[in-house]
Image 1 (cartoon, rainbow, N blue to C red):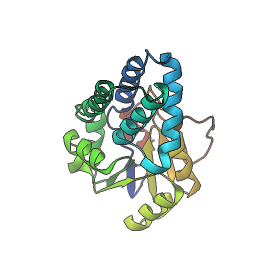
Image 2 (cartoon, rainbow, N blue to C red; image 1 turned 45 degrees about the vertical axis):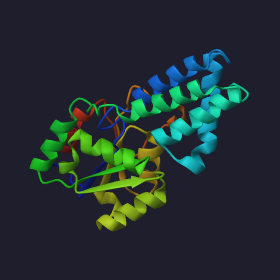
Image 3 (tube, helix red, strand yellow; image 1 turned 180 degrees about the vertical axis):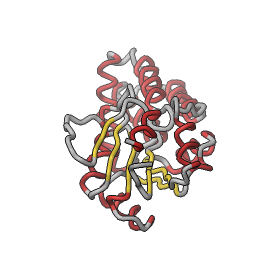
Length: 232
């Protein structure tokens, strides 16, 4: 490889496997459940507002999502929700927790290629610890990774701690992910490299208007372009 990094880190959700698609499907189903109390589009707005408000308490992940749906349901129904609908919301969340892990095209080929080159790779993802560990195990990809880091948030401080733990300098670290807000901006701010690979669906909370122009940043269309990019 022409471009040398001691560590290449990968985000998990919507970088290695499908995730946001399931959240949007659950969200739509929930909004339909609440249609007797409020227009689905308005329910979606209340749900998002509730999720953001609860972020500091619950963090990310499906369990936090379930709790926010339950709270939203009580709000939009003015506490008139019956037990049957609440049970349906819980079942909706459990169904999402049990979804199969679907790898994005090219992911395993890229990781296999990097393994053959003896490139150290790690996972850096945020969310619920149990759920992220479960998905990684079900994906079958865990054997490729030197280290797995599951954090509550992707702040500069967390990236700096990880880099220190891995005993590399910031310029020797490359982060690959689908979120400019979480996988790019804080990484560039600490002097590391970032590679953005967009996913076709992005949660409203992760969207940003920031336009990145930086010598340590690049954007690819798919993960399959990673190896050619490294060789360029």
